[in-house]
Length: 328
Image 1 (cartoon, helix red, strand yellow):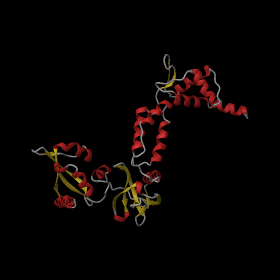
Image 2 (cartoon, one colour; image 1 turned 90 degrees about the vertical axis):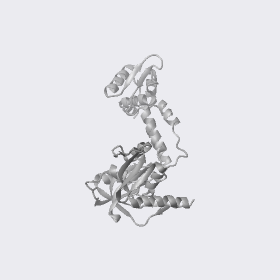
Image 3 (cartoon, one colour; image 1 turned 60 degrees about the vertical axis):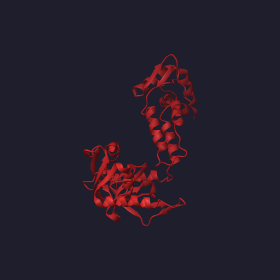
Image 4 (cartoon, one colour; image 1 turned 45 degrees about the vertical axis):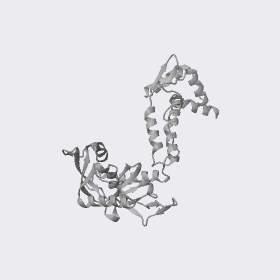
């Protein structure tokens, strides 16, 4: 039995050699040959120097970026990986700050990201992250819902789920009935995942927050395909706070100082029509059945933006502003 274990360990020598170089070396930290031999012995593997020189060369041939440096910090070093340290920091910070992820899931994902670099560089990732006290989701079903939705989209099948809100006691309050829809796409908006889908009940496209969906289930029934003229980018540009509904052409006048804000919201392809008074007009499709989110976006610009048409939308905006003044 002992010889069998020893032989098995020896067959894993290349695997553990690569693991040791990956974990304990980087551009600034190397391992000498005696140190490599010692770490292999920790795994029950005994190797001669000459054999290890050949093994390191075999790893190089297989694609590992291993170099040997003399002088200070001398030794063998694995100097590049699939993810460089700045990339891992970026990913880890995105995971940490995402409201979509629960605190527990954020920590789990960050720990996995840390394993993609050396033990020394992991400390740099740990030092820059602060998860506590950030607003985080607390619906652990999100990850399963995302996977289910992606599978349904790939297979062109319908899904069903219960939709819920939170009451003042932070308890789930389920809306009446089961939602059945044909998923079109998953999209990220205001730090939340949304499902864009054809919703049979209203015979129209609707949006659902994934973190407010109870466990989604794929149905056997084939889903409705998106209309041939459906453009997800145009649809999202016309939607504020992911409220769905029919869209209409809205003409807006902005002060020239708001060019960046308009491009950020509607994209670089939006057409500007400048006038002689340092203003420009645009005409965009806006979903105005629930205009409050759109009005909220306009309000931040004060008197530097005006609704030109349609007239009824302009009057609704004036009424909302007046109601706010009257109630304060």
